Image (cartoon, rainbow, N blue to C red):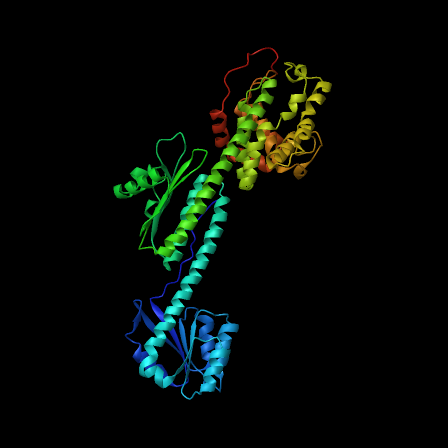
Length: 516
């Protein structure tokens, strides 16, 4: 899974938006004059004016960040203020903005109707409001609006914590896990702060056989630190904090630092370090603490899955090597075929999971050979037609061994075992499938297996030189092999040759007269 940081920016205004809805221009002038120097929590007041219900509705449909509405009850017509407040709550579904109804000619009965039947937050006589109550009413409304936003924001952060935790479990590598964790933490911190802020950080890993932590992902000013030792990347002061966290095998959140240690039962250890522009509140730290526990659980789960995957891969390699050993072939053949399949699958555009499955399943493509008699399998001379028919049964035997498994890896292995000797022109075996009737796993394995077999020594032949192998693939393009896969082979030949060199065979076969 490739991960990238959330690009969403959190809107943060430097003023409180107050909507005044009144058909009397003098009321608007009074609000602006009385509140021109007023500040609440270091933010000034921005007055937005509407002189009719229609104008107010247009403003409210566009402007989402209005803290308080001062609304005249008798606007266009009698009770129009009531209708507009109902529209705000029931149609716009805006339950955050505080609504203060104003009247210059109200009655006690009207006040009771307003308070009991409408979702408003205040009902004020205009004379009293402008004489001595405006600041009290406004501050009370702004505090309420602020607290609602904070609760709503914390709810959204918790939702993101849950969603991010689930996504972390889907990481396909520890490197991507660390990258995703940094990005999710940065996004959560920004939401906690209520604005886009600078977050610099890094993720480092160490396996059980390594002495130091190495940076696998950097954020902000640490983006270019990949591959460096963690001690060479951060300041001395920050490194001391990291060492303290490592010794405690825990995490710490200070005013502007987040440092956490992760480990797994498989011996892999991780460090996340973040430096934050500004301070985090107590609630923000608690939210990050919750996410940290989820990260720790996801880290252990991923490491455990990787250990299981590694064990499965090793078992399949050993099984493949044991099969090849019966026919006097080197176990490196299955390693090379596995790597060739991986390259072909990647370049063909298969999904990451499909690439993983074919890479792990390919080593046992010839598992059916366990049932072929030694006198045929290890015969140094040319096989008779009857003997070759027996050899061909290894495809069906392998399929029958594997087909009953419910495990995806073995399901893929069954397909490969069955179809890696099919030909694109339909002249292969055992089913005579043609073109895309052959599963892509079978088509890929056919190219990988033949490419390696031609270049490897066998008891019955010398290894071919690379130019002869390439000529064969040119001749068999669209006949034996999928033409798209042949093009991929030629376009990425350097990678194939690197694999061939990396897993080359030790000299094992004596040159005899049995070579063809």
